Amino acid sequence: MHVYLYVAVLPFLVAAIAVLIIQPYLVKIAHLKNIVDNPNARKLNKVPVPVLGGVGVFFGLMLSLSATGYYLPSIGLKFELVIAMLIMLYTGVGDDILDLSPRLRFAMQIFVVGIMMFMGNVYINDFHGLWEVYKLPKIIAGALTLVSAVGIINAINLIDGVDGLCSGYCMFASLMFGICFFQMHDLPYCVLAFATLGALMPFMLHNVFGRRYKMFMGDGGSLVLGYICSLFVMRVIQSGYDVVTGSTISFTLAVMAVPVFDTLRVMTARIVNGRSPFSPDKTHLHHMFIALGCSHVITSVCVISLNALIVLLWYVCTLLDVAPETQMYITIVAGLLATSGLYYTVEYIQKHHPSTYLALQAFVDRHSIRRTGILLSLQRLLDRGGDEQAEQREPMD
Image 1 (cartoon, one colour):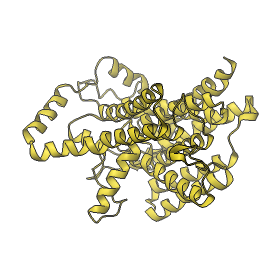
Image 2 (spheres, helix red, strand yellow):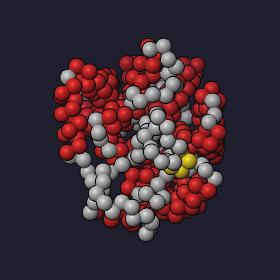
Image 3 (cartoon, rainbow, N blue to C red):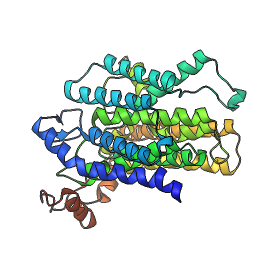
Image 4 (spheres, one colour):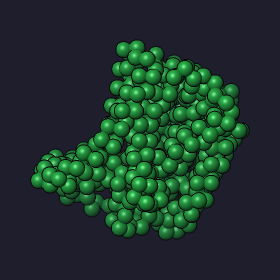
């Protein structure tokens, strides 16, 4: 019980309280300095929204790591990895304010992954018998880690398109990896996972249900969270620890399935159409749910639930003692069906059976959740007596 307190409960509570306190001040600063996300044809917000959410989350995260390190100095995270997170934060906030070039952002991502590998000593160096592959040559290990980590960072960055999706998904991933690290007795990463979970919770509540202190994560937040998720993945695979009885690699792929496979689908489609894989559009899975008429909340719940089902499927495979290779194939197929399969099925219905698509939209509209009752009371609590403009019945957004 003593260990639970220091590596899970304490980091969670310190991070959550810190973000809850600092968020209103960051909102005021963002409005004062015009650090906001302005609406345009591609974005879903209709009014300017502050984009310093990542700064608040990072503040809570660092305060939590410091408090935990004070009580248990031996479980501190490597300083170089904290510096890498800080570099990602500066890069993302700089992009939010100054609109940095994609090449510079990409270069900074490669740089921080290099810190992870060469200074943090975290990389994929062993397949642990998957497909009868064990230790990897250093060149292959470095290339695989670089491609995987940069891919994960961009996948997390690209799902930050609707309220609650990026924060909600990263809370889910942090919980999964936190449990895994606790089972592995990897206490520094367990602390990082639960601190991330705690820092994201108050932000997500304001982002989804609040109005007065609502903020977007911004690239400052999504890039840091992408880096943390990539760090979790590399650490678990490097450890070789079989969660329950399953393969570590299929476990990490199951947790990251929807962002990774959806990003691969979108980027492949752009390349096939002769466009840059980083060019913006509205072809992500969350855009499909929004087009159907789903609110931001329902969209986030649907996407995260799809990912949770893939993790559940992986877990069933471990209970049935399925071979690691088969687990990997099942996870890949499930990820493809949940992203490409679902997206292109709905797109086919929209193009070839418009009446069915309209019926789907009507169904979604009839069952939309309204901001009334408990949800309206929650908004008032979060806003602390702020605007009462949401008194009327209205769809959640």
